[in-house]
Length: 320
Image (tube, rainbow, N blue to C red; front, side):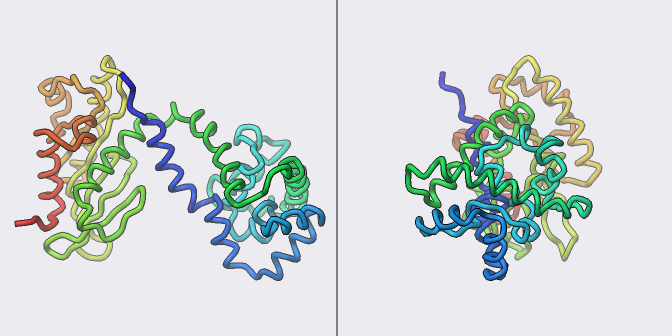
């Protein structure tokens, strides 16, 4: 049996988020906030002149390929763009002898004051490396698409290598998307981690990723005041022998949710042959149990119950 493409589902969600943080879209958006004359001045200072001419021959600006202090100070996360473009893994790049002191730029979007003075020399070294890369790829047209492809090629192994540390993310995404499909006609805003709908009472209902539990549904009563409606814990592991531990983890999460006055607590598992009676005994705080496979298929009695409850708990209008 062909397994579910969970890893690629996770990659797709991560890619949507990272595009706005430190890929080509983020670079272009940051560039729009800067004075081009100042940016050009720094490009001329740090980038070899022949490299700028080579890029100009392809109709590309220098900052698409080379980092300068003005740009990185405006958006420190863009260091991640150039790292990916140049093909450096995080493990190899953020070591003390290379760029370890600048790791917070990509991780947290901050440039620490004590290393700001090193940024100019660092950009010069990066631009020299970039010039070597540019020379090496000139046998083909250098385009925006090629630059984007090079960054993605570095991202793939990075995310695949960290997949074991993010088990369950794909399962959470599947459940989140199942809810999105149900409330789709009433969406007000939506992104990969958060959506809002307007219910029949005219109030805003938030459906969003959380850390513990994994997905929450809350109704906004007034500004910064919410009614906690549903807490959803998603256990994405497929190992049947470990199901008891996962149900126990869900119970701990739902006990916290109950203490935070969530009306309903649901547990979604990725094991089809789960004994629901056993699960109910091991997690008495769970009001409903569902299987990811049932929600993903969007059919059957189990899915219909889930759909009906999502509609009821969010309070979205129903077609009479």
